[in-house]
Image (cartoon, rainbow, N blue to C red; front, side, top):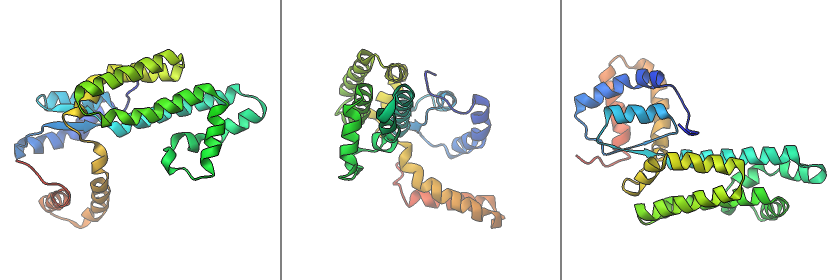
Length: 227
């Protein structure tokens, strides 16, 4: 699916079989689902939740952009010679970290590396601009921003950016769904960590229903459920 990868449909189907059964029994009404970059999850969502909006999680899209930028950096390291090669080689952390999280000593290092390598400068700029996509006020503005970003990436002539633009265009529907349903799977990371801890303790639970109630208590403590 154009750069989005992950487990196979069979693996996802087997992993979620029990979840779908419990969801039907609960008669839950799901309006939207945030998912990662797996086409298998997209397919499972369409099959079992045809009325729900499928949203490609923004944090996975940002991660993919970071991967493309790092791929370009590696290419530049292979092609560079002498002192420039060493300077680019040591910029991975600087390139991928948000500028506001860099120290006063690191910012000049980043500036110098970008000044000496135009492809990295263009890719880094587009990486930073990508964050603005989810700050747009409407779906139409998101669509316009996405198109403009894709055009800039295409005009750059940089292979890794061309690949990223192609991937985003192919998945625009799932990305733009965020405008109506601004949710991300990142909000669940805290609960996921608690569930992992609870799972380790669950070997002492002899009642499956009691374990499920404990899981539900974690989510009720974090979210207001709307019926």
